[in-house]
Length: 619
Image (cartoon, rainbow, N blue to C red; front, side, top):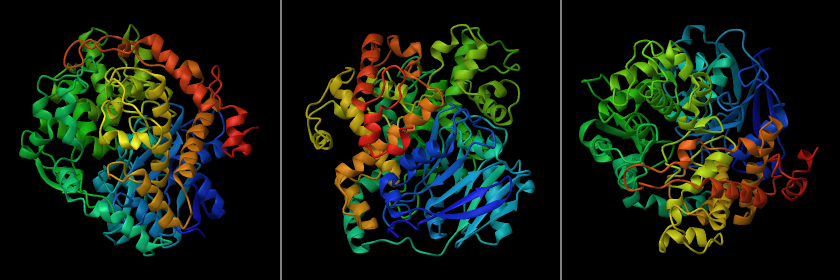
């Protein structure tokens, strides 16, 4: 068996409580690698067109990669995939923590969950064994209480978990899966799929080591990252909150449901403000020195429990500037509730911001909102709304459907400012500041996704920042707000590379170069691989994800952005900026042509499938 993998998958049918161990040939791993690309393969192969995302026929995949569990920084991640109940599309989410590495140590590369349990259950995987256990007593518990109960039952405080909370149980369409309590597989609603299967969680414990072809070569490759104390200190001090102030100053901080990119009280949401007020510690993931996870605590005005971690940039912006709330304690309370209930902080914050604007425009009355004064800046109402969403109570039942479906029911012009693409709520990055990112939102297999997008800010100036682009043939910087063929080309190359990273399951925040990643994969697996081969893995993953979507009925006409993206930003450093609608459509067409997709249907053409070695997918 190829090093870097165990060569075994666990297939669990909850309907008949059957557990089977499967094996795959070595070339399967080299072709699809793991994570995102392998998720696309399994979904095309095994999930038929028209399957109800919340029905027993949908399948749920827990996937690792060749570097998951390798003893180097940034390699503790795993992927979770299914047909998304939020979008109906390819659904996949990446998550850190310790669960993925522990799954490998327990003897399995992947877990495939099928069917639907007759009662709440959890899956217990340990040292090559697996069993389905009753979870009736766990149903309704929050994430922390569930992990504590499972560890007590198994009498092992080192058991690692992937769990859902009440949000997943109540089928909130953007419910997430929480690894080790406060590491979120946040996007695409994978927690709702778990809830529909009555799977409360997976607990894992293992004592084996992940086989590495050349441990010394692996350590040598990671050494410069280990010695990079300056970067480590920056991540330890700020985590992803390091960019909050800069985003606001540049006009890129989503404010009041993306009406503008500048928040007047943005300084109160900065990384320094968090450090000086609520931060008490930092956390990390498996084998990682960077310690970017925030841990906060408070007793007033909100009681905030440190066990639930703390907010990252996306959370601070989603519940802070996006909802017009400047009180960090309230934002941290919102984060705590989302962790406890198992809700994606991005979609939850955007759903509430959308409702706030609907109320201010008169599209939702106080009666519609159950007498909740859900206006921008009302932090207490925002916190109450999170609880209502998780429990699907009152207005929370509508917002739990996501802003696309909510706008369809509210009517009026609400769809113009329902900030979603492909059914998934926008991350905290302004498409009007980064128009090529807007193209990525529109064509993304999973809908709006900043992790697989091209950030125009990365290609604006000469200097060291251009070096990674030049090795891909992108030789000149481009103006920030300009849409161009060159940027679309950079988007495609960037997406292919990020799909590689998300298939190898390396953390994007650890500053490995492309050469480093090629070297790490070679050292772990023993493959004599190259950047070219890995980029083809990325392209294969993108193409299969698109193929899955076209089989589900999505076409070129579904690649859209809300009207707000084509309207000028009113205030801040980006005042006047907007996306030109005609240019946007031209760039989407260019993307299709470059990828070898039919411009009418969006389906990958036969030739590109053959070129990528996907002959089996042609029929």
